[in-house]
Image 1 (cartoon, rainbow, N blue to C red):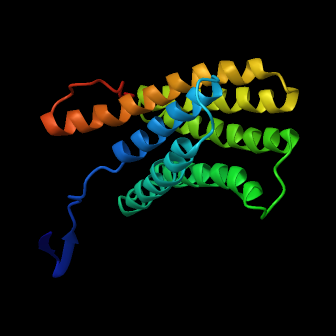
Image 2: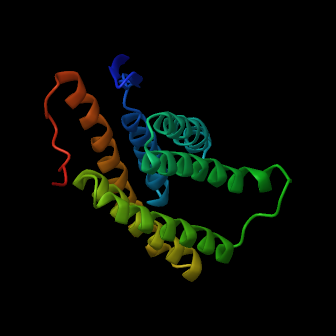
Length: 200
């Protein structure tokens, strides 16, 4: 904290020394996305491993990252991380609530609309990434396509869309993990070890 006097008025400037929450949010999103889309490829079942990741890492960890971005006055980070954290929690709820007898299972048509709205939301956020860096552009661009493919899979009942989404979603998740860990390594070494493609 620094103070200086100008015309008998005290001004205080606060230096932000808090850590960057984006790597946590990106890695929470990325790891959970990779695991879910391994399921979408038909390799694993929708079991407690995916649901646990969805609740605690994809869900709570991203919401925590969003709240930390709020403290850093980052509107984009706050909106994105908090929203996608809530996405994972709602997705788990859509699976668990019917199994617990608390609600009817959503129809394929309902899931198609659910995923379409997330595609729209993500597409608008993608526009915001055009002012940030190329790594985030890749994450949000791939995620928009992922939601569209998953929505098409539910609307049409064609499992091929879901399988394609699985492969594309794994790539999306891996790019998000890279974007998160690149920031960690760049911060630790105090230089650009892993490029993020900063927009000039």
